[in-house]
Length: 281
Image (cartoon, rainbow, N blue to C red; front, side):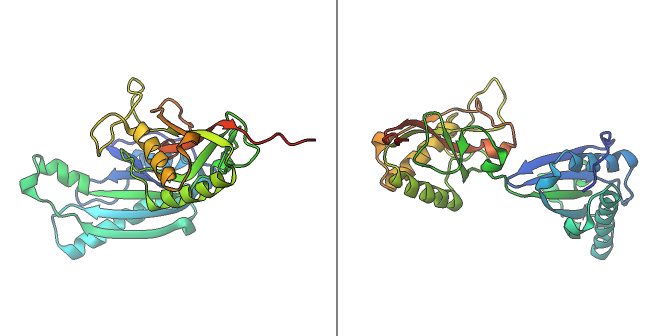
């Protein structure tokens, strides 16, 4: 993909937010319009340009309208809005083949009884969402010294085992099915290497620097990183890993990998002891 040009911010308000495995940018249109203003177009291109292009798996573009007008007209208008954004991205170097979905979704219905500011709500519905789907990051690819994704017999004190699939939703300490499968894999390795002792470390992302810990949405207490570590501890106990080999601790936001927010919603194992006999040379 050819390099992007550094560009300015938009005139209209925009929203950019991330979820697991994706980045989303929303840009807004005037009533009954689908032509992009120059600075508005520049902003969506700048949004894409800030993403590591090697991680972009695909792009989806969805257009919307407010609740006024006939359905047929609104589908055409929302599709025109989506196409206007696509054309601008392609013009600026985005490969059209990675744009896997382009849809006009028509109007978004408004429940006026639930809205305190109907004009503002309608303005936010006259938009296009650009969804960037990201390829997963493998910890081994980051080449961080002393960080691995498997337990091996020659691990030394201070090595860390990053659990690639043990990632959490925002504010949650609940283990997903994928996380449990990853822990099943690690448990097998730990049984093969019974001399290794470790600390289970829980981490969080996206909290202000003055608040080291985040709130667990289930307990409503500021204990999210320790709850994540504790969940893994209890799961490994179920897999017959001796509690004499394990401790757990929450580190809040103090040990960011400084890569992506999703990688900081993590648990990893810190090797604290390896009693395996030293191999003779």
